[in-house]
Image (cartoon, rainbow, N blue to C red):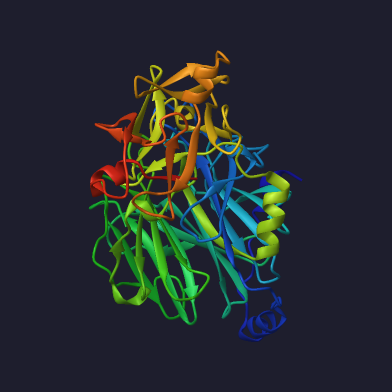
Length: 460
C-alpha cells in the first residue's frame, strides 16, 4: 500500500458515548515533575553556511539559557519527502512519551505545495522511532508550522497547522495515534491572514498565539473549549525588531509565570526575542532583557517542552553538551566575543562565519589554574594580548605567548553571577571591550560602572 493511502485515513466522527469512552481510556501517566526544558529547532545563519534542516535539540534548567546537544548537529533527519524539516514541534502525549511533528520542507523554497508532515515517536528523546509522513489534506497548498494539543472532550489530539484555502488560515485534523487523521477543517480564520499558531492548554483554557500577516504583529486568542472557530483574540499586537514570527508560548515549570518567544524571521537579524508575564490571560507582556536569555546557537522556529530531571540527564548523557563556549557581553547582550581578521572583538549575533564566536576554554597555557581560549575554527590559535590589544594568534609555545594567552576567571566585576577574566602576566588588567574591540586594561572595584560592565561576560 502506498504511503499516501496508508497515512491519510479519515476517522469517523465520534459519538457522545464513544467520546466518553475514549476520554476514560486516555492514559494519565504518573510522571515526575518537570524541572528542566528541551528546545527543538532547525538552524540557519545569514549566509546559510550554518543552515541545517534536521532536528536539533538543546536543553536548559532555567528555560532561558540553552545548551545545544550533539554539538549543535541534528539528532535525526527525515528520510522521505523533501529530506528536510522546518518548524519542529515536541508534544508530550498522555502516556508520557513524546511525538515530534515538523514541516516537510528542506530549505527556503516557500512556494512548494506539500500536504504532509514529518512524524517521529520517542520515549525520552534519546532515540526516535516510527518515522513516517502523514498526509493532512488534498489541497494545493502548504502544511506549515504544526502544533498539537490534547482535546480531552474529544479524547483525541488536535494537529493545527498553517495552510491556505484562498486565504492563510489554520487547519486542524484530529488523531488518536498520529498515524491516521480525520478530514481537515478550518480551525482559526479571524478575517485576516494568519501564520504560525502555537496552542497551550492551561486548565480549562486553550491559548492560541499567532502572527497576523497583515500587520506583522503577534496576538493571543483563547477558548474555553478548544473547538474549531471558538477562539477570541484578547491581546493587543506584540512585536520586537523589524519583523518576527513563530510565537512560542510556554508556562514555566514552577507554574508561576509564562514566556513568549518570537523568531526574528530573517536569519540576518536577531535570532529570538522574548517576553514574560505573570498572567497569560491579562494581556500584559514585558520585554525581556537579552541579558536574561541565550537561545540555542543558530536556532530557528522551534518549540519547547518541559522535561524531568531524569530526562534531562538522559539527554545530556546520550547527546553530550557542547565542547565549546560562547562569551556574551554584559552591557551589549546581543554581542559575543569573536575573532575577525585575527582581531578580538564583540559583534552582534548572528554573523558568519558563526564559528568565529566558538571557543574551547582550556586549562591556562601558563597556569592550569587559569584558562585560555582556543579558536574552534582555527585550532591551535588562541586569544592573547599584544601591546594590550587582543589578537588571535597561533601558539608558538614560547613562555611569553603562553603568559599572554592565560587569564584567571573571576566573579564578574559588574555581576558576580557572570565572569571577568584577569590577565595572568598583567594582574591589574582585565579582558574588556572598548568600541567593540577587545583589550586588557587596569580595572578594580572602584572603576566606573561602564568599565566594569565592559569587562563582564556570560560564559554559555
